[in-house]
Image (cartoon, rainbow, N blue to C red):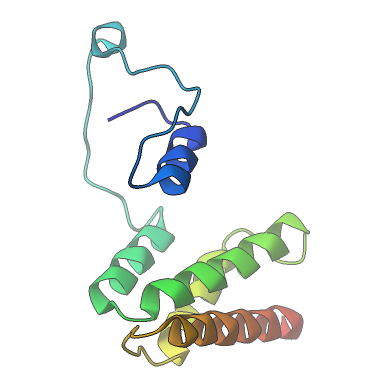
Length: 126
C-alpha cells in the first residue's frame, strides 16, 4: 500500500526486479486515520469491468484493451470524442478482435496495432 502517485508505479516498472527511489514519501497509516473499502461500481466505471474481462480472457486481450484505451483517451483529450465514448471504443476492440495466446512479442505487437487501427477507424467514423 502506498500514496497514490504514479512515480511509485514508474519506479517499480523501471527498476524491477530491483527497487529504485521514486521520490514519494511513505504511507503513514496513523496520519490517514482510517481506510474505507467499497465494492467497485462498474456501472460508474465501465472500463474497470472491461479490464477484468481482459484479465480473465488473458492472451492478447490486455494488450488490445490497453491499445484501444490509449487511442480513445488521446482522442478524448484532443476533443474528438466524448468521455463516455471511451468505454464503447474499448469494448468494441475487445469484442471485435479475437483473443490469441500471447506466445511471442510479435503476437502482442500485432494485437496492439490491430486494436489501435480498429479504434482509430471507429473514431474517424464517428
